[in-house]
Each structure stands twice: as structure tokens, then as C-alpha cells.
Length: 80
Image 1 (tube, one colour):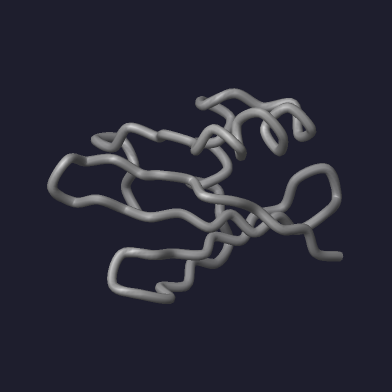
Image 2 (image 1 turned 90 degrees about the horizontal axis):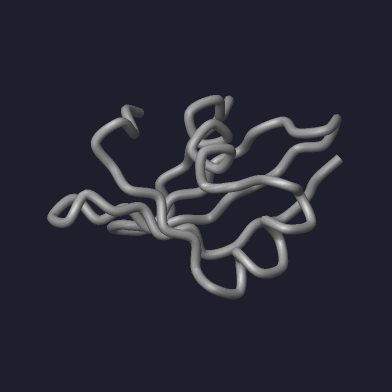
């Protein structure tokens, strides 16, 4: 999926907790979405992206808005 034209916008809770814990900024978040090894569409606009970071699988849940070219990152989860 091409994210060059999209603006990445993390929600406030995600930015203050998970982005700080993972030590990433919005560019790192975009990189994680680009390097995802699996992307599932779970709704009309909602996606789940799976990527490897620091030896763990990170699932990022986001909403893609085609009209305004925005991606709103809602939350994340960790796997093994």
C-alpha cells in the first residue's frame, strides 16, 4: 500500500502512551506501516497492519480516509 500521499495522524492516547513506549515518531510510524508484512481490511475503512519491531510483532489498527488522505492510527497490540 502506498502511504506517500497520506498524512499519518495518531490519536492522542496512542501518541502519549504507545508511541512513547516504542520510542517512535510519526516518521517511524509511517515506516512501520510501509514495512508491514501483513495488512488485513476489517471494515469499510478500518485496517490491521502487522509489522516486526524489536523482535516482536506489533499490530497497528488504523482508519484510512481516502477523501482527506489521512490515516488515523487508533491503537496497537503486541504478539510473540
